[in-house]
Length: 405
Image 1 (cartoon, rainbow, N blue to C red):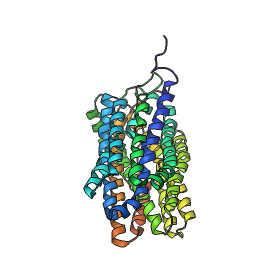
Image 2 (cartoon, rainbow, N blue to C red; image 1 turned 120 degrees about the horizontal axis):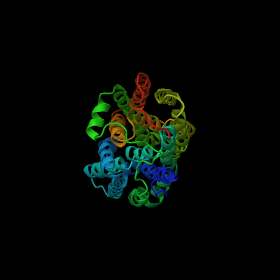
Image 3 (spheres, rainbow, N blue to C red; image 1 turned 180 degrees about the horizontal axis):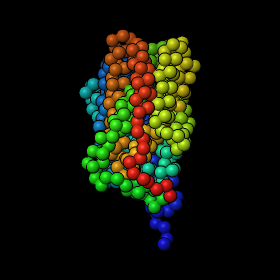
């Protein structure tokens, strides 16, 4: 029988490449938005906590949107979900530049962009990729897709800084809105239908049954706790590194270069995590990553704050940045199967974004109250130790047998 478009051997790789590009746009633009905060602080006169709350709302809405988008993708398809998310993303970016009040900033940068990011991010994209790759190749495929997002950050951080320098934040945000619509053409390849070589539809036959199965599994609850910490770390750095760098008397270009280095080294980190997850138990890798983050943050607190220190910190944290994603999503697919992975990973993503909410918000509040970020860094280090311990007792045995062929 002649292979169809969706059963051709190269189709999984088309889905993977398209997913890499979608995540590249999504995760390239969003972490770069913190670069606008110093100029917007000067132009508007609003407080750092106002911007911290806006980015906290964005992170929270990302988390709220993620399981909803996952359920929509599981029910109505990945393509439609991604296109809808891209529309929210573009509208939020464009309107953020014209926000005339803190409420307008919270509605655009927070609500609209948060929904857009949540509907075009990991749960939807990685679930589609999981369905077309067999179990023995899935961890590495998820690592490749996560690395795609890092390429976007590496490219978009200096690009955003250049746009801001030449067009101002209003013009730069309008350009980013246009760029975000690149997601749409690649969404059409992200059907996420299982090929014969990919994952079978094993497990519960409804979303409700899948949810009840997961909530009774202690490992699923522990993954939620660990991913909360990941969100806290990522939000603190992505949102407040530009302001922290400026506080240290360094130019904005240092922060942009730091964010770019995070993206660059995250490429290697996620690829390594995806490869390692296919060879060793994924929970050990997660414990190592969170413990290493705690050590790096403590060393950064003690080091002199120079441009070189910022760059080294960014590079090392970059290697540990999204390396949690292929391992966390891989455990979910391994334990529960890929059929409802978009929904289940969306729930875990909500926990991640609740952590991100507190990271972004706490950073702004602490800075307004104390004039520094010391308490935030100390909290981030302590949470890293906690997350390293939380993953150790996870039972990652598969609940059902899945074919590798």
